[in-house]
Image 1 (cartoon, rainbow, N blue to C red):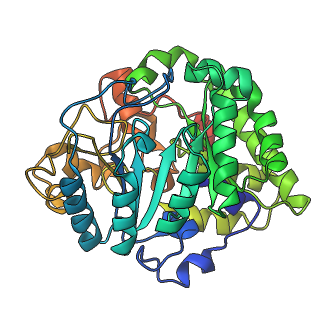
Image 2 (image 1 turned 180 degrees about the vertical axis):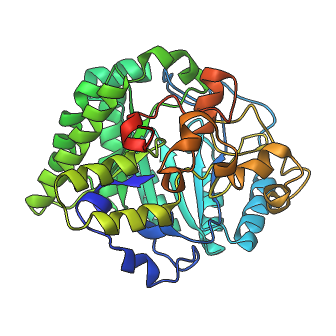
Length: 394
């Protein structure tokens, strides 16, 4: 997760994270990515069912009932363990989490145990009553997926009217004073809509957006050919930087982040060097604090059936099941060779990644993408768009 607004616009400085000792239990949510202890943020795909049919869905969800999901009691036991282990955030995802009736009970329970509870949703089922319940239980954040403007999004989501329904859900959350933001997965189908999405942020007064690079998992594995080329990725990231800076210059504060491609961090740094920006060294310090991709370390996933994964995209590799062992035991057990290597992945990456001068700030990027393309989880990340010269190979 690369904070474009934090880094390029200077809304966060290294001293901000250092002031809290860089411990995840003490850091405000907007600084968690700079924690030193890397207690994992846990994505709990609490249910697989979804009312939409998104073409890139990593869980390959459908609008049907699925068997074998964790019960409410098992969910509460999971939350007990996560809280005791020191996990700062429980991210309730799916499928579509608002389709699970005990979402409110479990999210409220996570809050009562001292965790931040957030949800990742398509937003189409949120009305004023649901938003009021979110407010009452103390939900920290609602991330709503929009993958383009109206026509693009509805094609991507597979359901006409999904765009307008999502905006209605966002409006309901805003009426309750709940922090809400957008999630946008970049690909060839929707990259042309990014400028319009920035216009939407301003028009609807939406304070936050995360732009996700495509990960080749689930249905997304069929979209490899629709991922951006290296040059297209560079143009898109420049556009995101430019639009973020333009809003900032006008006094319109938006939190803008990119996710799932950590070469974005060095790219921002190199651009600032070219521009003679005096804050470039501070940005590099923050990037080193961030530490790059943290699958298997600072990010984790518990699937609907209780399986534990390195992240939400790597569900074909499980380290154990919380129905049989607590998450905390599974997460700290390095008897599995993959888990052991993920704890210090920089020692194991190959190809361009192994020789890159930015390895300390990227950590080898996304291993599941390397596996999808090369059949080797330790090969170079095929989505890195930095040139050989930029990474120090020439």
